[in-house]
Amino acid sequence: MIAHRFLSATTRPLSRRALLSASFSTTTSNHDVFSKISFIGTGKMAQALIAPLINQKLQAPSSINAFDVSDEALKQVEELYPGVQVSNSIQDSVQDANLIVYAVKPQNVGKVHAE
Image 1 (tube, rainbow, N blue to C red):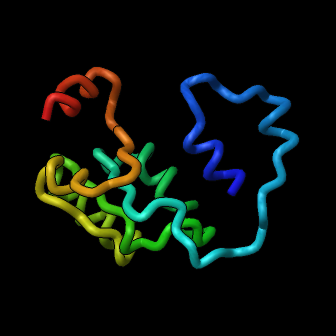
Image 2 (tube, rainbow, N blue to C red; image 1 turned 45 degrees about the vertical axis):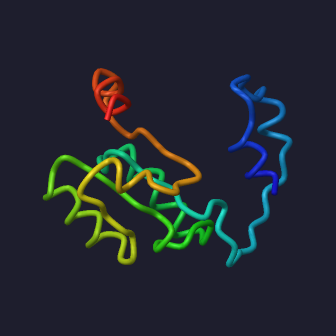
């Protein structure tokens, strides 16, 4: 539950003291944090977020969706993280998503957001 509060916090960042004093459970859970997470972009930044979500059993692979302009990048995600869903468009990827992660270079955020 603490992780959920951090993820759904307002735009005001948490202090270092608050982060260090938080107690996170080390037990695994079968409950997804979100019913669907959509990653726009599947490069190093996205994979650095996807891997621990799956490996620490915070999110089922089937509830993670990814889109990338590169078909090769999508194939790599499918191979590295079996069960992760891939989409052919941003619109398909973000449909019904509770959390949308823009894992793209800063200069591409405006273009992605416009779609």
